[in-house]
Image 1: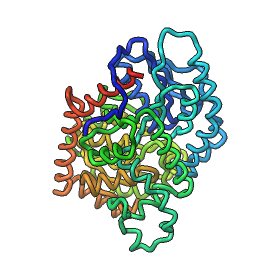
Image 2 (image 1 turned 135 degrees about the vertical axis):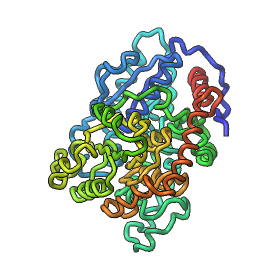
Image 3 (image 1 turned 180 degrees about the horizontal axis):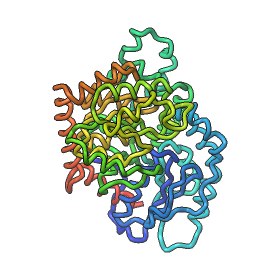
Image 4 (image 1 turned 60 degrees about the vertical axis):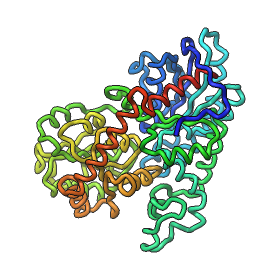
Length: 464
């Protein structure tokens, strides 16, 4: 399906002296794709200005080609940031930001628009979760486009969430938990418990986001047509505004440098010493937390399988621990050079490395896309938000990985790693994900679906 533009007359214009304002959500998995989009649009001739909040502000010196507003939005997020380690439901934090940022963002944007400049401002692009920005943009008569940093399928699935709490799905029997949702058969009722612990809050949030996406001037997706073609058709039917699938964003550049967390690049030399296709790579993302018991089960599972592993353990990831205090006794000494634990990794380079054979992931959309792009099968342990939806697609629809259905338990962990790393089942997954990798490359090549969608987006923004 081709990208559509509704009834708007698209007249390509020069992007010279045209500025776009971007407003990212202040979390690693959201800031990275927004900054990648900024770089993509900059290479197409647009001037880019970033407005951001105080929490997790990016370092402007890493992006000398972009303009960052010198005074971040006063978000007052520090008042609740400490609760990130105890609350896994994202709606609590995002709703707070949607309330605390309204006036500061309006004032900042209004001041910027009245400053003397030879450059016209074409539009503002905000993260879809910042739904309040639609009303602000309307008041200032500025077109607002939306960036969705998750998959098309997860966006569609969220719209079924309003009915979840009515079904009392949080009090189902074990057998009922395994049943599929009528609207989305690939999802199971037990997945809903991971998506949100706050059905009412998620219902309100999903409704607000959807309504303001429909009121926007267009939607930008970090995905590619061939991966989610049926979902793209459904989105195009549901939303009258145009959709642009120009992802995966990170593939437009050799390696992304948009991470807010310092990467340990020493592990690349360790990977160089490993045999080809021999390493299990483990990372649960930038926000997820696990218990001490779960952490120890992961350690035992990795130790018992006898394969080399690279394990990312973010400081504070284990509830109640600073970093590695909860490891089994003498774990590091016993593993020696077979295992490496780091605080953060250059993930794209790790997944692209010849030694990496399997990715054990939380299935955030960025990580899922990066694994597809490098042809690395996955083991899935989703925690919350869109992660269970992505994991179901990986294991049950695309069949390029397996889900750890019983959570973090050492015997199940060993079995899952063996299936992906050693069994014929893993080889079949590898063939399928390599086919998707090839589709990624074709979509980004000249004339491919993502390349054409980017051209359409450039023309569309230039027509404002």
